[in-house]
Length: 311
Image (cartoon, rainbow, N blue to C red; front, side):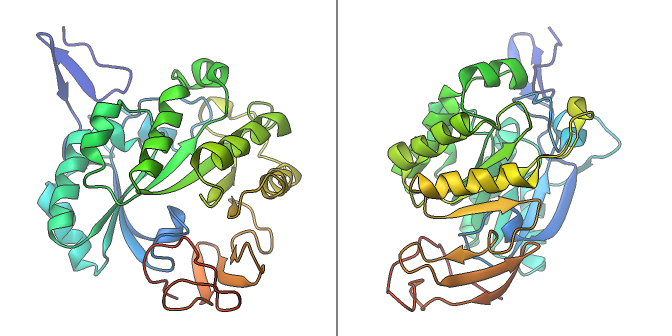
C-alpha cells in the first residue's frame, strides 16, 4: 500500500491505482510539427506538452530528465485540460502534441485534453512507445488523429533487457492504428551495439512493409549519449545512411534520417518518379511541390500526407 509503479506516476492506495500526474506538466512549447511528424500538416506549428513518467526504463533514454522523474518535482506545473486547449487556441495552432515523456502514463489527462480539443476542431498527436493494452488503445484512439510510434529495436530480448518491456504489444498497437486509419509514422533510434545490426533493422523494415504498409514513414534517429549510456558514442553517420538505404532497398517508400544532416534525407520525394515534393531543413519546411490534393505534380501519385502543407 502506498507504493508507486514502475512508471513513477501511479500509486496503490488500498488496492486502487491512482494517477499522480493528472494535470501535471513538465514542458509546454510551440514547435514545428516536423519534430513529431513529417506527413501530418507539414510546415505547421503544434502546441507540444509533456508530463513526467514512462512505462519503460530505456537505458539510453534521450528524455530521461522527465521520463524517469517522479510526479512531485521542481520542474512541473499544473494546467487543466481546458487550459491546454485554450493555450493552443491562443497560439493559433490547430494541433496538440503529447511528447517527450510517455503519454500513456498520462492517459486520463491526455484523453480529457483530446476530447475538448476535438470539440474545438483541433487534432491530437501522440509520440508514444506504443506499450498499451488493446482495451485502453481502443478507447483512446477515438480522440487521436496521428501517432509517432517509437520502436526501440526489433527483438523481445532487447525490450526485456534494456527497456523493462516487451515488443509484441508495441507491434499490436502499430497494426491496430493502421487498421483503424490513424495516421502513423515510426521512429527507430539507432543505438550503437544495441539495435544497429543490419539484420535487426532489416527485420524491422520487412515487418513494416509486410504487416503495415510500405508507405508508412520511417524515421531513423541518431542516438546521443544519455542516461545510463553516457559512455556510448553517438550513432555513426554511416550507420544511419546504411539503415536508410536498406529500408529503401527492402521496399519502404518514405525514409528519413533525424538528428544528423544528410542532404535529401529530411525531404519527401515521390516514390514513383523521385522528384522532390517537400524540402526540409532543421525541422522547417522550405518548399512544397504538391497539388492541392497532395498528389505528385509530375506523375500524379497520391502522397500519404494528411492536411495542407505550409511553408
